[in-house]
Length: 299
Image (cartoon, rainbow, N blue to C red; front, side, top):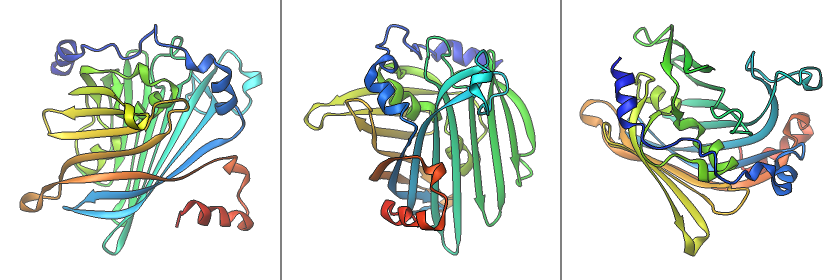
């Protein structure tokens, strides 16, 4: 009940602006996103963990797919399931970094409908984390006015759990919303569900929180900046992206306390764009294609 009351008080901004320009209807949009390729961009990563900053790399993979609105999975045969098909922009975000002797491997998938007037909410969100202590997997599925959450964790206090939270904006859909149309980003005092990756690393419950969001132009660089501040935790998120279509993500950074007890301190997690390519990566799966990883700077 407290969550619902909180949302009604702080949910001031309109999340999906029906009157915003429909960039997905332009030939430019169709030529770029319906080309049969995925956009793959690598980033040099500095990840805060255990009170220190660890170097690694991140990859953003954007691709459009035909998605089942009922089963909430990729359709095997969209032509035979036209009534069930929803065109989505999928983001696979991958982070890899070392903490001392062992490596973290984190992956997140976001499934956001392209046509927001018909389908205004992200349909599905998944996140997994693998490191030497064990695995954690989280999934959110849209169910009318709620997100159904399933959490599986090796930590006793966290898993295994199934519960619902009221539908609201997802921090993890910010990237897909930028790529579809940044004018639809919420601003002002808002409610949102924090990133599953941050919730995982900070061992926080997945639930809506209050935030203050701002979208501004950087005219001298032809760039835009989207920032989100979380008053209750002091965390800050900044994303810089190109002002013009296709609104490529240039960099992002997060500021929050990392570490435990007296070793906890505010650190910056930062990812800066390195290389980008349009590629049908699913067809590049032979040993011969491994040279592409070298060209992209991926270990």
